[in-house]
Figure (tube, rainbow, N blue to C red):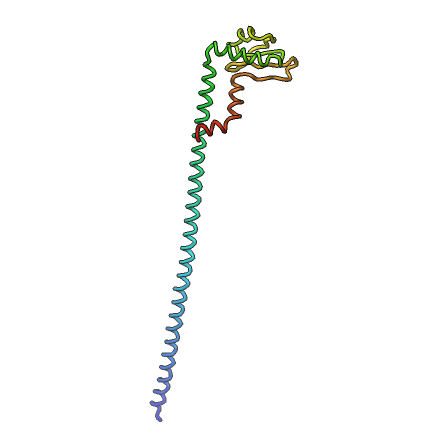
Length: 183
């Protein structure tokens, strides 16, 4: 065996080891690349799922916000209609004829003057109230019509003004009025 044969054997063994190392390196690189691809795929899937969840959350939030705005708009519109109905009723009462005013005041006074000793009215009804009532006329009040009856010491005041009656009826029947107007 010559030196050339020994060198050739060493070179063959070295070449075989290099081939084995290269094969192992290629296999390891393929495994690392495959793991990286799998990891990237998992990350991408998780991010897509998270993005979908975020989109769905945003849709629900926007829908809820839009529904709330629609309800708010409807309530405001209903409130405007109710206020318009109230104002229309108020204007109707304010525009009652003198005959109707006298009839209403006469009925109110006859039904309630026994509950007090003094009576108030607006300036326009003063003469009529003095004529219809036996109570002491105590002065003018700011109202559309009607009267306020008060006891001797002023501790009890009964409000029979048209404004007060309208407010009371309106408050007590608001739900029914709303149902009639809006179904």
